[in-house]
Figure 1 (tube, rainbow, N blue to C red):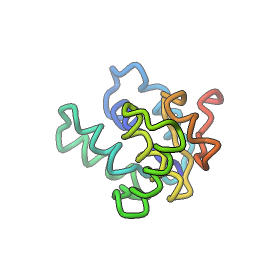
Figure 2 (cartoon, helix red, strand yellow; figure 1 turned 180 degrees about the vertical axis):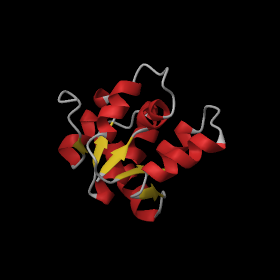
Figure 3 (cartoon, rainbow, N blue to C red; figure 1 turned 45 degrees about the horizontal axis):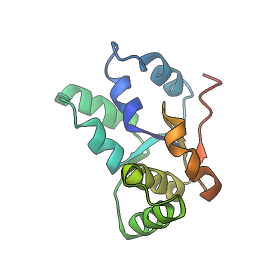
Length: 129
């Protein structure tokens, strides 16, 4: 399964987005896709109509993973272990969601998530796209 970060969720439904070709390359992998509720929230922090929302729900056949007690606890541990930088709070929750789902995380900002790789996060290699 591939967990999609917010930047890819946004790019999938916006052909004018700089990252749209990368998003299409990820989708071409023909695997099951999912996202964390936090990535879903970030994607909806921009105007999104019902048609695009429905299209994303269809793509996310693996579901939208809620932030539950286990996710929050792991995110807290990731936050502490990577230096407690306030800027990374959402990223720690997205990373925790992917780790608990056993999914690779696809993002156009791998640098934001590399600190979590030694702690169990699997990043989808974007170089091969």
